Amino acid sequence: MRYLAVLLRSLGATLAADMSYREDFLVALFTTALETLGRVVALFAMVHAGVGLGGWRLEEALLVVGAAVFLLGLHVGLVVPNLTAFSRRVLLGSLDFVLLRPTDAQFLLMFERVSLWGLPDLLAGAGLVLWAAAVLGLGGGRVLAFFLLLLLAGWLFYLLAFLVSLLAIWVVYVHNLINFLANFLRAGQYPAAAYGPGLRLFFTLVVPVYWMTTVPAEVVLGRVGWGAVLGLFAWVLAAFGLGRWLFRLALRHYASASS
Image (cartoon, rainbow, N blue to C red; front, side, top):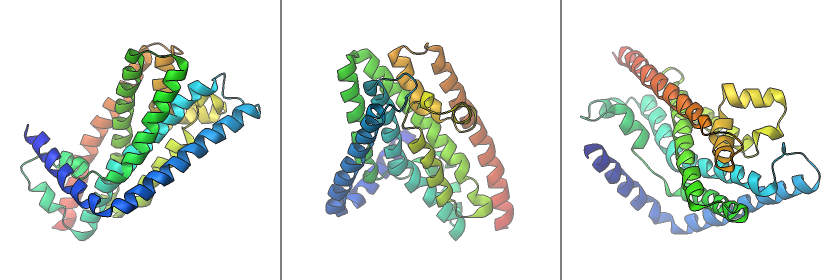
């Protein structure tokens, strides 16, 4: 309950600050709508031009596009504001103020801020998923399962971004690296089967975009068994364990540098 109270307090403070820029938020909604329309048009063009999607129909591929857009919203709304603030604290030497609080420091660094600017992409991604699900005739249970898997994929993406942000202890500013990681999500907005064997292997074993965007769609469409969910869980557990270990290691380096 204490962690939930901290999260809600931070959420209220950051949303109150973002609401001061209502006009900018409306512009962001309009921009996101255009970008989403562009993604759908590009997918239509690929299908009608005969570009193979690895046996995926247009409506099925829209599930993957929606997943990628949803995760990009998470990137803008949660990942960027928190992890950029983390690297800024390292740069300014104010990370100690977080470490001295009676709450888990990693939790505070990862969930201190929430930005409204990620909401347009979250809504656009969810809208694409619901539209594609309606066309495909997916039941409510499968749609719910898709969003639950998508939240798990979002947690994996955040953990990977946090691993990258820990480099701030040594190289100070990592904002560009965090944004570079988001570019892989844009590459993963199409089914993994649409890429060549080399890229499929890369997106499966090196940067797990396949597990974050394609696997949720494959599971609810019945293309793979529910055992694939175990693979996604394995990635999450590995990223979480590695993140906890590297965070403790980074703090030892930060303390020695401070002294």
